[in-house]
Each structure stands twice: as structure tokens, then as C-alpha cells.
Length: 105
Image (cartoon, rainbow, N blue to C red; front, side):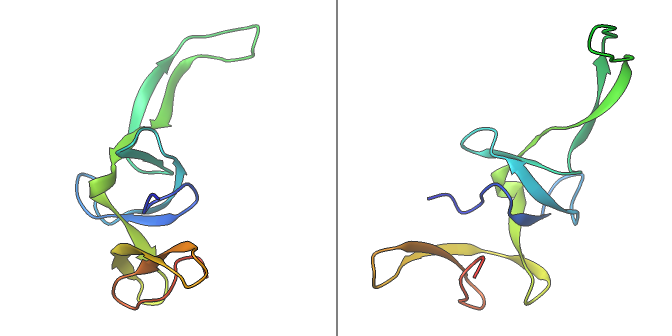
């Protein structure tokens, strides 16, 4: 079970975009995530008249290492560590380490 998943609200805790918040768009690899508005790069785009693409430069969100992001805890308003625990019924859930509350509940 991954501690950070698609759709989670995160905060960047290290790197050039430190302090930025965003939503996870995808988990690119095992150890990288693509976050909306974070780690943007300019990419060259070729014109394609068939698809209606003009060409030029486009901003693209690039993957960032999962160790440089932390889940955003709305109760505290800060970044928080995440743990995994198993409930009595056998289901595994993620929880915030500081408050103990279940993520997404």
C-alpha cells in the first residue's frame, strides 16, 4: 500500500518548489509522483496542423521524487507523515502520525 496516491493533497518539503501545495496527478514510477503546478519545465512542441497544435513552448509538470513531498493535513494546516495500520475487520488504512486520524475519512 502506497502512502501517497493519486488525488492526494501534498506539500513539497524539499527542492526548488519547497512550500508549494498541489494535487497528485499520477504516480509516474515506484518512487516518483507528478504534482499539479510543481516542478514545471518548458517543453518544445512541434506544430501539427492535423491536430490543430500551433507549436512553440508548453509548460509540463515533471515527476518529483516521493521523498520530497509530504501529505497535507487539513486539521493542522501543515505537512504530516503517514502510517499504515490494519483495522479490526482486516482493512488497511492510512493515518496521520501526528493526530492519529484516518486519511480521507
